[in-house]
Length: 332
Ligand code: UT7
Image (cartoon, rainbow, N blue to C red):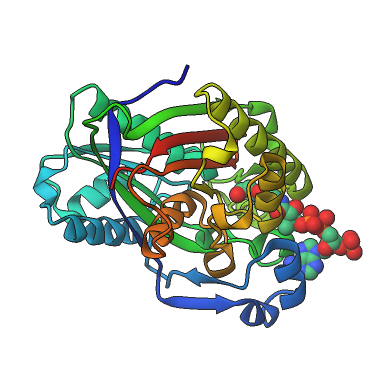
């Protein structure tokens, strides 16, 4: 049996900073090639924020677009949950900065750190406040400026990421059959050593030594993360479908985290769904960490690939390790 939450997504929007960086642009800066990046990851280009543009700026832009599209005022928002691993600063929370930027004066909010699964964690958490009746309108935002923590001497990692943000509005669900049907999350902390940023926290506060040792950058054991991601994304997808009495044939669309096209294809092969049912935009955005899933939903809506009542699976694996799968009936 699933864990139905009486909450639904009623709108989605995203924001990509305007500067596009192609693989050819990266060739000028990094010992890499367009061919390697395309064939090993599926990425062609990504967006980069300009210096001085942080996660709160991207998140606020996505939120503003969402509010405008929904025709609602920022005053109506009760809660803002922000997923990010690149907060503007360690504190105050990026949610507070976004609350101020968009003028959501009746909202409280907080940040949540679950890396590439962050948006799904935030979605599940935000939805609980709607389901409990505490709030009628919750903003869930995934925003990351990954370029602020990239090491351009680490070619296996720096080519993967881009900057971007997405936002959804969550509201109470009326009928039993619409909105969020179920969620699965877990953590495997033993994988923490495979994807992390060691510097700048309480263990290794910023010092000349942490800077010299390049500790303020993402470190990744790519092959380890790759294998874990394909296996767990497939397992989670099967688990959440089975316990709801569904199969992959019932799915209208899978919106997976966009870390590597080969991870997405590996997962989809194990699940037995064809390309038409899988949202892919990694070619244009790269891996935007907490941004990938809302940006995927945004693209799916724009491409008219989502219709009311469609069964949709959102799925991610990220640093931690963290995982998330959210199953829903698209509600608009
Ligand atoms: O969202 C967060 C979760 N992150 C992920 O899910 C990422 C998971 N991992 C991956 O996507 C892949 O492991 C990578 C894309 C990071 C790396 O791909 P890979 O196929 O595992 O490559 P590799 O690290 O095994 O490297 C293969 C070769 C090496 O050369 P040699 O030793 O075989 O001569 C690397 O030095 O490719 C080389 N290489 C590159 N060559 C050109 C690694 N990066 C690059 C590069 N350009 N950017």
